[in-house]
Image 1: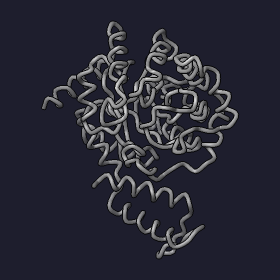
Image 2 (image 1 turned 45 degrees about the horizontal axis):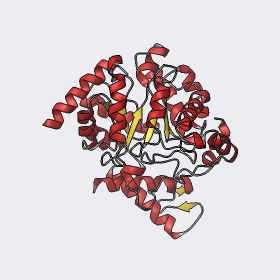
Image 3 (image 1 turned 180 degrees about the horizontal axis):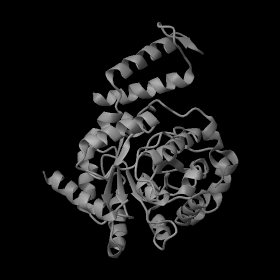
Image 4 (image 1 turned 90 degrees about the vertical axis):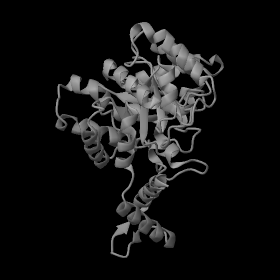
Length: 355
């Protein structure tokens, strides 16, 4: 993502507000992904639709983002922060996350490049802070990247170092029964590794999408970083990204993870283009989208909420499901199975966001 564009968007946000191994997730991948809302959770917590980036060196913008209406706020330590501001950004973010409830929505942090000089210290400094809901890992190419981050996190808690990977890889288990959904739980696994969200931004990352998604029990999601991926692949239009997008969706679902959110739409002034792109992404199986300005949030949410017709169809499916088990016949003769019923539950959960 272009750092200058993100910093420009942050200025706009401020003005508007004033105005492992494959086995690590084997059990999760072969269980049915939760498509309902767990007890005590809201639809926004279980199925976040809007993920808003805010620059880590602008704490006043971060705090405004927390009340912007986004389902998740992503504090960015990477592209949005100039090199000379990196240390300050980390300190400001750690101070924010020292609060167990820094805002009304979960807070994730995107750390710096994993092969650079800053990421390890950032992961160690942030791990264990009570307000951290997840770490977003840029430019993940394969399993080794995820495992390395998990090791850094465990080094922040030496008493648990070495315990988590072997246990998780052997059992394929996670302490969170709703591992495939949501964005609000800070603990990704039983060894104090935060929830991890891997960004695929290279050709190698796309090729290894499923391996990354199942690399460690703490992995809670994968997503595309399309700006860098376009540059790597040398594509300018949408057609060149069709396969990487589908690959990411399929890998996430095969691994038992929630559907991934779309990558950012960089033109904050093009509302029609954003709406059109969201409709296309929804058709590919994405769920929600990351944003770089609050003005994009309503458009994204509207695009991903079910229509009245979809809600009525889901209600019909659930009514049939209540009447029996196994394959079900609807009044019009269509048959539905457990996977379709699970999808109907998710549709109704999202529909409740309309109030």
